[in-house]
Structures are given as C-alpha cells and as structure tokens.
Amino acid sequence: MFTLGSTTAANASRGSECGTPSIDRLQQWIASGEGVTEPATGSILVPTNRHDYMAKIKFLADDWAVMVVWLGNKFEAQADLSKSRGFWMTYRATSDLYVQLRPASHWSGGDKWVTKIPSTRGKLVRKFFSFNPDKWTTLPELGKPAYPLAEALDDARGLVFVGKTKNDLEFRGLKIDGYRPLCVH
Image (cartoon, rainbow, N blue to C red; front, top):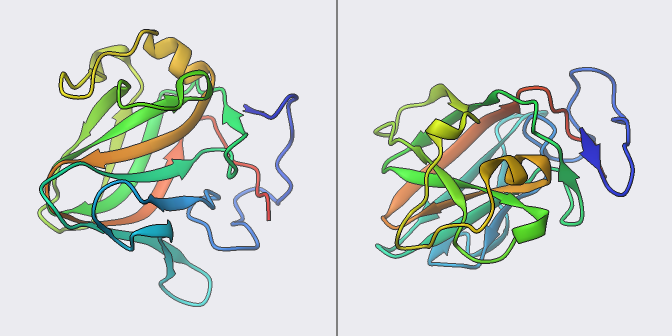
C-alpha cells in the first residue's frame, strides 16, 4: 500500500505509534502557509499527554486556508488507496470545511476531488468518510480536476484540508481503511 519506487513494509510493530509525534502513524500534519492560520506554518502536532498527540490549527479569516497531511510521512511518498473503503476521522470543527484527495501526479492547484467535512459545533466526533465516488465532488470556485477520482486514489500523496471560513480545528484520529503508514523518523 505504500510506494516510494517500491513497496515497503512498516517498520514498527502492529498498532504502535511512531517514535516521533504522530496521530495514527501519520507524522506530517502541516500548516502550509496558505491562508491566515495559527500556526502559520510548520507542524501542528501538540502533545495531549506523555505519549499521545493531536493536531490543532485555526483558520483565522473568511478566505481560503490550507492544512496538509502527507500520507506517506514525507512529500515524495504516495499511497495506493484504490482498495480502501475510506477513512475514520476523530475531529472537532467549528465550521464546515473540505478535504481534498491530492495525488502525486496532480499535486499542485486547487482543482481536486473533495468531500465535505461537516462542522461538529466544537464537539469531538468520530466519523467515517467514504472513498465511494458518489461521496466526492468538485468546488466550482477551485476548478474541476482533469483526472478521475480513481487516479487520485491510486497515487495519493496527501489529504489537504481547505476552508473559506474561520474555523477552530482539532484532529485526534485519522485511520485509513487498508493502509498503515510507514514511520520515517
């Protein structure tokens, strides 16, 4: 499921977190510098206790803001999610937002397949988001991708969370069906 030129097995025991900060073995939760956010750039992982982490970011303006999760824990990596049913996410959001599935072959630009991440009104919830094509759409304001969703699933590089309203976001879990990230640190 993990590709970086070749298939690689995970280097940690089943079910364990990485040796460095991670949530469900995802180590790269990043404020991209696109839009007005707090923090503005860098890792958004913060400790909740001695061994666990959460990701926290605020979208501070009513304009597009971006937060990135690299699925293979480094930019050059990609994951084959073509057989995955979707992902479970534990999160809080004060406003609706979207997540883009960004493939390595079409990383840049806003014209991506998206699914809506509904507001939780600040409550912590666990919700399943399906990779079924009828659950994904495009945003006219950002453009329509020139490739099918299946292609994005086949060479997925990241999940990119985007929103155009102020939002307080917190992520506690992100488990992708059939995919276990490789720890890189």
